[in-house]
Structure formats: structure tokens, C-alpha cells
Image (tube, rainbow, N blue to C red; front, side, top):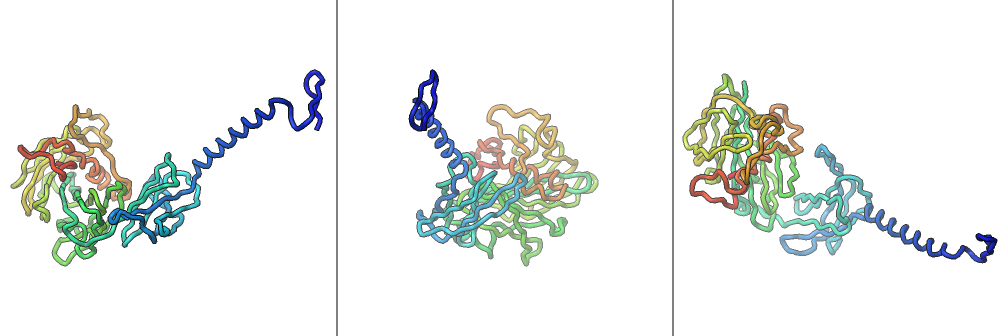
Length: 369
């Protein structure tokens, strides 16, 4: 090829002097760009490890699922781990995703970090056990929110599994609880595991009167089960009666500011500084408290989102309205009531504040005292 250069000079060959250097520079840039794009759309791959045995786990069904902003989930495709516990997917990711690993009848969810490499993901599974000693109920919290004609009751059970096995016992369940007959058998249940992803649960009626259970696998670490129901509350006064099946567990009652509450065995523990919600300790089995007045814990600080209230000083525990996504499907009264604050109330007494005199913070008291 012949090219006519500046000043009438003639160049023989494919390019003028210097163009090769520019070509190489452009090629390098294109390679870097290709690598960057490949990183964004890298293959989703990784390994499943059995933490109970500390080894790779073959034969585990792994499902790639896309998460929605409303808490929904769309399952895209599934595969099985090979002899080395390895799995891989070819889908291009665009949004939030999670991996679901099914092992011994339990599904473990691993949310894929959006900004980190996706070709060496680590997913943990555990062997299961049905031994009741595996699981302990560390705390039981009642939230009472009386209104003009009915009272929203929300209960939270904080569960701890200190072993390296997942507790799974369909016969005994994870918890058993007493449902007041005034609730007419209507109760909502949600389970929040160590991964902090709420899933709906089912409360199953037992043969004994007013007794129910929630059966759900509990992996190692701390989990919780939330219950929500409504009972009548007429004339701005009423009585709440229940049976505390875990009387040896740290039990708390929480009521809105301005609501009068009294009952045998109640021990005032102070107020939460932001919402001024009243907190009581209780020790015993048969719980009977009389209430007068009405109020919502979410409104105690000036708004359901805490607007209008001032943050507490120092290290005092605080409450925020951070409802899990599952609660968007509850009845309106439950959304407006205790369900919207269950997650945040578990932050009470994280630093040991508000405990009874002489009672120091414990492993089970890191959430609600």
C-alpha cells in the first residue's frame, strides 16, 4: 500500500510512523474495557461448604433467585454441586440476587453482594438435628398497643442455637405459645433468621386448648419469631391475659407512653428514650395485666417514622421504624401497630441499659434486655 504523507512524502506499508504505537495503546484500552465489562457480567459460581463437617458438600441443589424491592423473589434456574461442592450459573445479573441452597430439608439463603466478584461465592449449609437441647429461647417480648376498640398484641421470641447444626424438629416445632381465645385463632407469624431475611410462618393449632406452635428450621446463630394478633379493647380499658410458656426465659412487656399498666409480677425497667415506651420485666407463668388509655408505640416519638422526636444522647438504645418487608402484607391494623416496630425493639438494651438492678448484660440480653 502506498500513502501520501505530509510535504509530499510517500510511505510504503500499512501505516505511517507512530500509528502503530497509537494502535497498541488503543488495543490495550479495549482489552481493559473488555475485562471491566466481563467483571460486571462474570459467571455466578462458587462453593457450598458443610460447616458441621467443615468440608465441601456435593449434591446440594443451588437455585439462583432475583430479589425485588418489595421483598418478592423470582427463581431463575437451579443446579447441583459437584464432588468438590462447586456450582456455576451462566445468567447475566442485573439487580439484586440470592442463592438458595437446599440440604437435608432446609433452605439456606445467601444474598449475592452487588459490588463484589461473583465467581467465588461461598455458601454454608449445616447438618440437621432434632435434639431440643440444641435450641434455647433467650427472650420473650410482648408489645401491647391498645386502641379505641381493640388492642394489637405482638410477641417476639429470640432464639439462640449455639451448635454447628440446624435445629429441625417437625414434631416439637421451634416454639410453642399460648394464643388468647379472644384472638379467635387468627395470628400472623414471621421467622427472621441470622441472614435477616423474613419469611412467613404458619402457627399450627395443638390438641391442648389455646396452644399453638411454629415449626421452622433454626440454623446456628440468633433467630427470632414474631407473632401478631388482635384482641378486643373496649372503653379505653381492658385486661390482657396469657400463659408464659417460657417462664424461665427473660420476659419483657412494652407499652406506649401514657398507657396505664399494672399487674402482679411486673417490674418497671424504665422507658426507651426516643419513644418513651414503657418497659417492664416479668417473672412467672400466668400473666394478667390491666391497661387503661390508648396509644401506639410508633407514634410516641411524633410519627411512625420517628419524625418529630429527638434522638437520645450517648449510647442509649433507640427505636426506629424499620419493619421487615413481610409486614407489608399484614392487615392494616397490624401495619399501624406493633408489627412495624418489632425488628427495631430488639435493639433495646443492646449495651445493657435498662436492666434490673444488679443484673448485668448477658448473651441473651443483647437484644431486648
